[in-house]
Amino acid sequence: MTKAELQQVKQRFGIIGSNSALDHAIDVAVQVAQTDLSVLVTGESGVGKERFPQIIHQNSARKHAPYIPVNCGAIPEGTIDSELFGHEKGAFTGAVSDRKGYFEVADGGTIFLDEVGELPLTTQVRLLRVLEVGEFIKVGSSKIQKTNVRVVAATNLDMQKAISEGRFREDLFYRLSSVPISVPPLRDRGSDVLLLFRKFAVDFAEKYRMESVRLSPEAEMVLQHYSWPGNVRQLKNIAEQISILSESREVSVETLQSFLPPVAPASDYLPAFPGGRSHSGEKSFETDREILYQVLFDMKKDMNDLKKLVHETIAKGGVTSMDITNMSNLFKESDLSSVIHPQQTVSTSSIKNNTKDIQDTEEYVEEIFSLGDVEKEMIKKALERHNNRRKLAAQDLKISERTLYRKIKEYGLD
Image 1 (cartoon, rainbow, N blue to C red):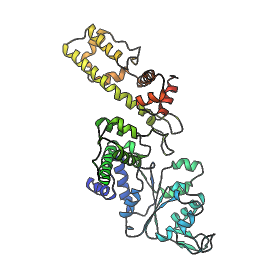
Image 2 (image 1 turned 135 degrees about the vertical axis):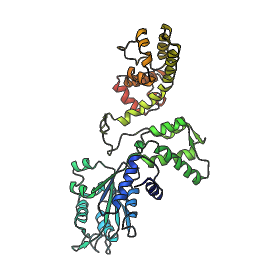
Image 3 (image 1 turned 30 degrees about the vertical axis):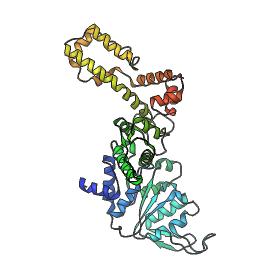
Image 4 (image 1 turned 120 degrees about the vertical axis):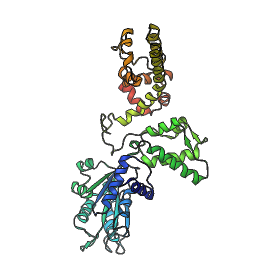
């Protein structure tokens, strides 16, 4: 698919963003649309999975036939079979007449089964038969009926876990996922977060007849690095709240953070991250980076000062004892005073010998600092500033209290 064709699909279905994983998911949806294969769309709650069945249906030969979305999690277990496959009069109390189910009504078209992982096991057996041979039986009937329906399903569950726990049939999973489509979470879409926020801000400004809100550069950084457990749905909600409640149209970091809730534990869908662990209460990259971003943000000024000092020293053509003292004082005055590794002592002669080899100050600082030590020191100083009042310390560090409590225990600061 060309970029122009991809952009047309995005505009038609209201998809905003240029993330490569999102583009790939759209490309797969368009390609598979011309077939009758079943498709399973996976992704966290709020990522916009409901767009992809629409893309598939509208780009298929079935586009003029019915398209029926069904939220499997919203239908009571006792009536789900009747809703999907229909029932005969007198099949159960309250069945005063015959009723057609979705699979009969959608014959020749497409059914979107949202939250398919919530289907009862008995219903899963019926669905498997439809997928395998195109047949179903109404509740209270013995007559086999045929249907020609394309099934697109979606779930935010870890399906392998559901299968291992006996909550979902493995054979049905493989029948549904003839072609899998994975929709990336918002936190992995980079600058798409800013594009979406601006779009929502403009939309709400028009809706409520007010000037559109704008984010400061620092607020944009915070917005991009927030983990967005509710994904696009949560971002839209936050944009609406800020549009209505913010007194200033220029949104600062402080204003933005007052609208962002503390990050909740990861959902069951989240996989383990490289270098981290799973969602089962153990350490994960997504949780740790919340505080690391704040640490690195606070380090920025000290880094710039250090780079300036090094370049000035190089320009003078040498390094003196006074220069060494100035560098040492720079660290002592900052919150990074105790994070230099003790085994890495630096002599005047070694600095002179290596001055010409310094290409990038950030690389040099990366070698002599431990982020774990920086993190520990920042937490320690925040607690000292607020007399061990953890709530205030967490606000100062711009992290959740949950994260602060875990870090205090991890570093033995309690």
